[in-house]
Length: 203
Image 1 (cartoon, helix red, strand yellow):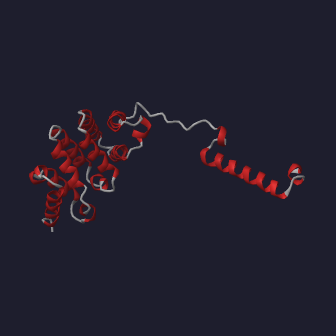
Image 2: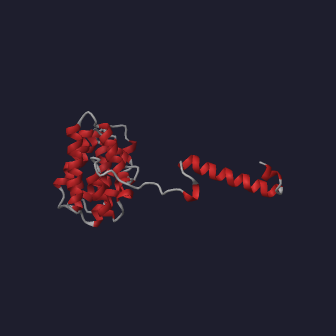
Image 3: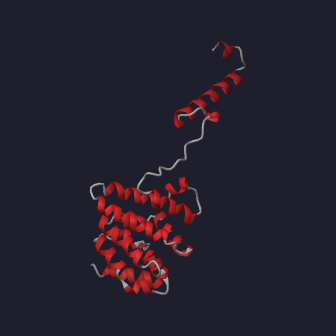
């Protein structure tokens, strides 16, 4: 403190602000400011979702750490927590998604897939029962070679009305996944018209 007393008031103020800044850095990051060690970006290779993290990293051409933080992996980890008492169901979900992504979907399909989970519309699927999320992942496997059908289903699930409807989400999901009109549609307007019709049909 004696050194501060012997300095100009503006210099004392600068020294105090600098000290406060580094104190905040240490408190928030638990590190020592500019000389701190970098935050660990290790990814747990023993975690059940690791194969999906690898597949996501490969398809999006990003590193494993960024892939592990992708909304799709957040979705998967949420499913794992929800299904802690249903290990067989969660195992099927993981296996189906892994097989689908390991099948090297074409760039457009991969973009639609990851884009869906990165949007708020992904909440619709997450709010469905875990057994029906498994059915969704199983449907993707069945349509692996039909890229357009997969993209059409993802377009249907991206319909904003799905989050707003108070109707049975699980029943809606199954209807949309089994709707041949949606799978064979040639454009998005046709798909959304069919989704609207399906929702109205539940009234």
